[in-house]
Image 1 (cartoon, rainbow, N blue to C red):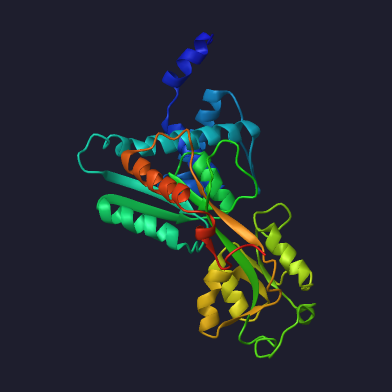
Image 2: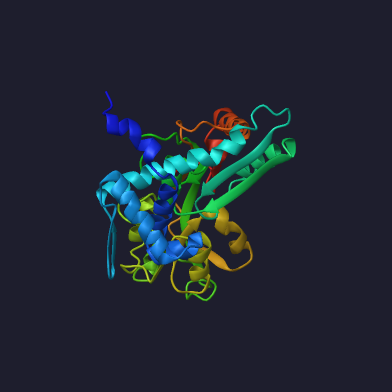
Length: 323
């Protein structure tokens, strides 16, 4: 049973303070949050103090050269993000009774997902529902999962290293990674390249090629080629990894079907090994706790039809089957 003060809390709380707190945490700075909100820094500081007084907890430790969200602050931020995501859905949910499907669909995805199946679903849906609008945000896979869990986007498309507990994440498509060098690399023009030729060569990598990351198997491909330990360049963004390979900063791994165009243009060359290439799954992530709007539910049904109606082999790119 709730205690009396717990009954009063949501009525006494100034809900605007939650929005201010969320922005402060996201900006990692009171001054940057003030600029973002168009307020003066003392106003934001006072709002944060009022919120801490309301909840009876220190939410952010703030001292010169130190900004740390406390455990209580992390819990509140997670709940604020969920509230924000729910409120952002209200306009779309109120459109549910309209005769014509309309509203907005938000997607967040990892960089440079190349999937003809994804493109086909979106193209067909956009053609049939011309009053629906879309927004697409690019983020690292971990951030994609966080945004979906916080209910701040309807659909996430990303890599995952293990099935998230509270999210639905079927495989949308599968791709294979191989090693590539740019046209300026010493191996580019060599008639025959053996795996041993790659030993000691500098490399570039994705941030997620770390132990336990979603591209861990790609890192093992690098080890198999005995490339120089420690990448010379890293990025979370596929086009930037590609840029570093083309610029001859180092050898790097790319999805085979994505790199095929650059190979055809003479900008990249695929290197050994050519067998047992790592397979990487791209997942469609949704939050079962989200009350989907009518357009979101319709797009989700289209994705479900794709995943249930076509085999994973048909949604696999780069190599016809694992070797």
